[in-house]
Length: 84
Image (cartoon, rainbow, N blue to C red; front, side, top):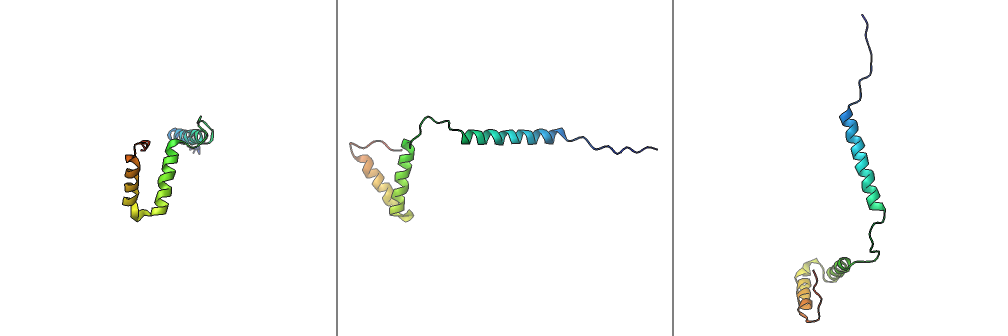
């Protein structure tokens, strides 16, 4: 009577899963780290967002209605640019 003590073959599905996960993480890090944008400065949207954040810092969250009133007043001016 012979007993064979062989090690089981690794599960190929688990191996494929981990290789794929590692590949996705590496590609994600590479896309995040490598500079790909042609615009190097602050964009229009970022400037608007910064202005809104600064306005809320001054007025406070409980005066949100005042912030929207100021926005509407600003947008009613004939020389105002359309803000999103």
